Length: 411
Image (cartoon, rainbow, N blue to C red; front, top):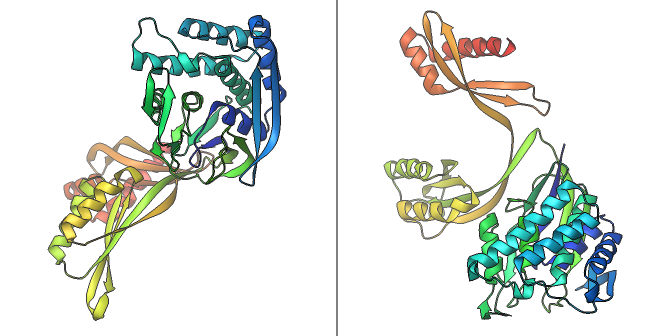
């Protein structure tokens, strides 16, 4: 079994304090935020007192952890050098692990890099990001993730992130949501996002950077998994339409079975001839469909018809739907979400000698959870080549090649 962390910011986005709250709710030590506050207070005495509150709150009837940090005097750390130096000193004072330390630096570099991309590198000022709140969010998140052992061979997945809408006031003026820094971080880390569902900023630059620092794998849906711990973190804003929470799920997935999110695109047609349908399938496969097939059916008014089904990755669904409509003339298609499970497989080549024939054969190896070989399948093109050379039936050649490959694997 492999440990996984799912970060679900699809409902109300992600902020720094909300993410830390979710990790604490999932089992991280709440006192870690107090440790961070004490470390910063000793490093920046000019900030005065730092009060920390971690409490359960209700966000639209959803219980979540709210992390509130009140700094008596918010000392500005507007230069990138000052921010990075304070992050380093804070992590050192906390005696953090190497993994947590490196994560905090990755997040800091993402924030600084995004600002440099927008404003240029000369005399860069961090403005809103140059606050002690940013330092607290980054270092507290690093400690919480370390407490949950996320840095210990845990696979991180992220669902599409809601960024909100409307406008946000920044040091450089009024900007459309997502804020420029947020957009740069999401782009740099390859994290998919969508606008809305509300006309307010839902994902902040710090929240995006904390997510991007985990190098997450984007998924459209939750994988097949065994959940072990769930945490809800509350954002500062109260939203009228929905709970302002981010959710994290810690769990395990079976390494023997892999999973992926797919889409099925389908339509019924009763006025397209066989040649056109055959070409449609060939074109769909050439355009990137994972599979395409046709099922005979009885259509309206008793007419014989066909169901055209296409299996696609979510990213290719719109493109393939357009191809399907262009080729069949159908006025609409259905797009259905689908989860696929499959065994681990490898593509290999082996040199064989068979009844006077000598050459390389490509084959798939299917393995179980413990690495044992469950099945092998030679590529049909290679089998056809051997069958033509030896002038023997394909089914007999397939059996002999499989036997020869299995003997090679045992050596």
